[in-house]
Length: 341
Image (tube, rainbow, N blue to C red):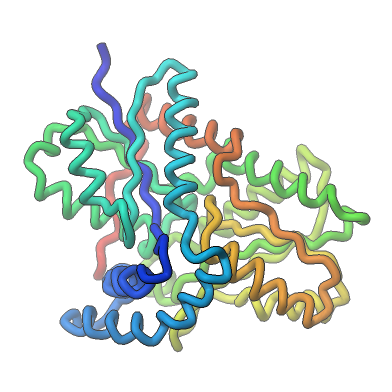
């Protein structure tokens, strides 16, 4: 009989009710991997200040998509779908969900993993591209809590650090884009617009974050697949959304890129949320509402978003492939996160 296998899916989390918004934002901005300050003792007071100032607008944004984030529900559905696919392949595993900034928190998941007697744990971040602010933060938190639980020291932990170039993931993205392009009257003229979550530029230039390179490689992989297998030779653009604060973030910014495309006379956009595998506030509100309104205002005639992968069967099989490969060759997965400097 094999070891008792667990899969730990890491994600951001989101407030499920409007009254949760302030606490969620506080957890977010109190994370030193996300908001890096030269004076650490200012982290929590500044997080409280930022959360208080941003809460009213953020509540309005969540109200516009139904009053809360669907991220936990979708992640739970992904966990169940992954469990089912692994079972079909003959692998019995229990899949757990650990959110970084909202329930179920990492400590909740680890308590259940310990109680269930898991012997081998595959850690699967639901961020395709590594960043110190997403995967890095989640892995750092996991490492901190792991050391506090002596019983977990006996567990074999296998960490999947990044999977931006996983063949099944690229295929799932290409198929989804192809389906959306096919709905246009002139499919060849539709402009593919990749919108990735941004990070401060200094994360890349000063801290060595691989995020920008992995995003660009991921886009190249998807476009190569679209050309080779789907004969889609559409032009494309990559831009970055969701910046916060006065510091410089990765460019071009999504709103600027949309306006620039419109000035070129392009009227059809196929928008691809490249760094998101689940629907949440950045897709449902920021892209679907804010950027759609902007696009219409600057002359984009048709603005169509490719859905997040959610429980797309090709995507779930891609996650299962990652788990299978990690179990077969655990030395190829890296348990090391980038620590805060």
